[in-house]
Image (cartoon, rainbow, N blue to C red; front, side):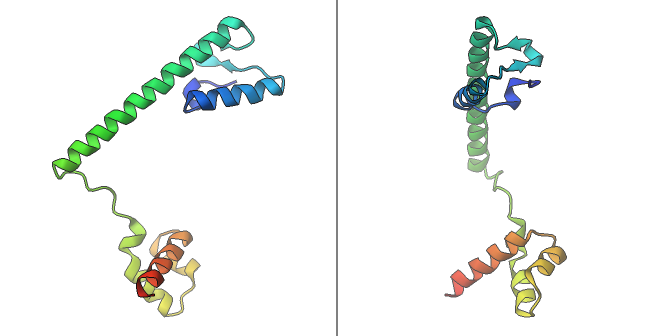
Length: 128
């Protein structure tokens, strides 16, 4: 059981794969918000139709988003997010040269441990 179809799959391929796995296990799907039950032929048809519409709607939304970002970039209003860890790279390198452990650097600067290692790796690549 799922409440909304959109929460189950992002594309028809995902939906088909998920329903196939469920069917192989002898399980049927129910979508509560649509009162949809795949135990009936009508339910199966409606699931495929609604899945197709959901995928179409998502693709249209992403297309509009890309167009909006492109327009904002052309007008100089969109620059993207500045990576937090990259802004703190000099501090990461300085603390590491002082012998501070990566876990402590991450906690002190409010970034992830993975970001600390990424900054240090980038630094080694630039130097080497």
